[in-house]
Image (cartoon, rainbow, N blue to C red; front, side, top):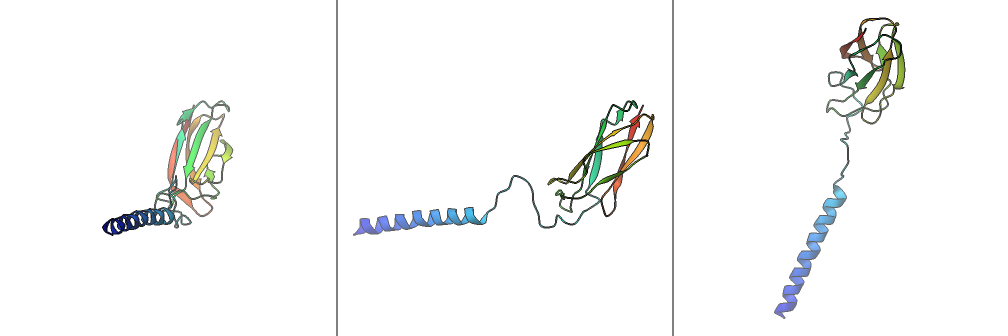
Length: 138
């Protein structure tokens, strides 16, 4: 009788362990990238742009890639935002990806035949990003 009671307790404990593991598995969502519910609100102070390289030949062929990240208050990318660059009309813009992807990233390539230093600003459909960068075409 004692061995039946002992096996019943062990079976109950094993069943309880599996039940707890199953409940944790069902209620916990794992994702490979950060997500959030507040990604609709752009935080301009968190958003930024950068260029690589910062200088290129002014031959109309050598490109400078500008990447813009539009982020929310938690630093999570905001998708489907149309981005434009506020630059000199002397610069040619190739819109590689002017609408942000799931990481909030937009991509542009710039060329020109006019040597100078050019300030580059990015704009969402709502407002300008506060940051700007300077590109040198020589």
